[in-house]
Length: 114
Length: 111
Image (cartoon, rainbow over all chains, first blue to last red; front, side):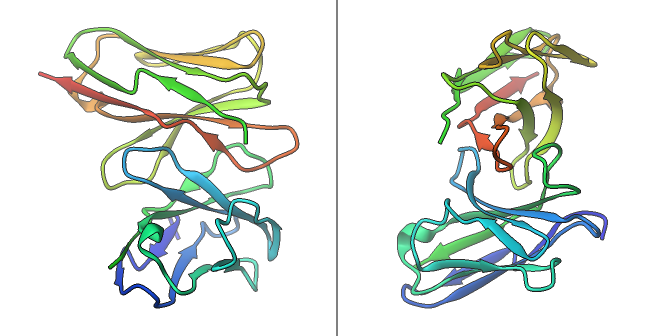
C-alpha cells in the first residue's frame, strides 16, 4: 500500500475484554514498531519486529500485552483483559531497514476501554 | 530509557513571528529526528540529523544538532498558520532501533 494502515481506527470495548489491533506496514518494509501515544504526548515505544522476529518487547507494559508478526508483514497487537488505563492511541510504524532512520507512522487505533 | 525534554511545552504566536523550540537530553544520541504531527494524524518526519554541530534547513525551518549530540533546536522563520501542530523530537541510539520521543511542543500560529 501507499502508507501504513491500521485497523480498526476506533475501538470501544468493555473492561475485561480482549482486543486485537492490526497494522499493515508499507509493502517491503522489514521493520515494524508499535507505539502508544497519550493525548498531547509523544509516542512511547512498545515493541519492535525485524521481519517476523520480535527483537524487543521491553516497552510492553505487562504480560496482558503481546504482539506477533507471523509472516513478516502484517502485525497484530493484542491486549488481554483490558483495563481503563489501556485507553490510548496505539500507533504502528514501519521502516525499510532495521535502522532508526525514517519510520513511517500509521494513523493509529484509538482504544477506549469503558 | 533516555529522556528527551522539549521546551516550551506550549507556544502560541502570531503569523509572521519567529520561534525556536528546544530538545535536550543528558544522553548522547546517534541521530535525532524532528517530527510534526497534526490532530488526528500520525507523526511525519521532517528531518534527521546525525552529525554533531550539523545544521539543516528545510525552507523556513532550520534544525541544529548540538556538538555533543545531546540536544537539538528547531527554528521557524516567519511562522504561518499551516505550521500549527505538535513538534516532536526523537532520539535514536547506536544499539537500538526504537525511537525515544520527547513529549512535544504544541505550536499554535494565529492569523
